[in-house]
Length: 155
Image (spheres, rainbow, N blue to C red):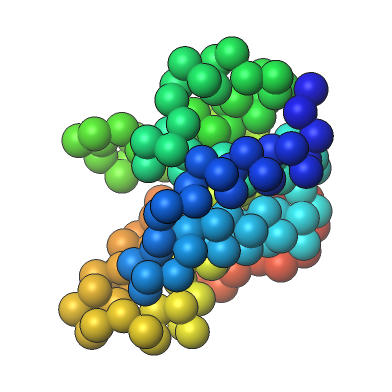
């Protein structure tokens, strides 16, 4: 199995040319999500999935790579659960996350970082408002309420 250090290095390489909406290196987001998972009591499989949670969706890695990767089946399932599909309704996406053991904690950490006020503050008003509404809607669909949870493991 790949170690967490190997997964991190792989994710950083895969996303090396990508930036977030504010123009920051995308790996900063991955690191924040992985650290958020760790802080919320996540296990190594969830932390590995956090590093890879956007890799397929962002075309940084392929589904074929993931299928052949030396990762646990659970890590692969969480990554796939968090990979949005073209044209997919938010409700279907949320249901897949809720149905996949370990995925909710990773998505919660992802949403917490995405909705961080300091991160949103650098965006233009229209983008900030659109994303704030989007993230709040997903939190509601996942039953996370409005406040980010900061302690205790979640399966």
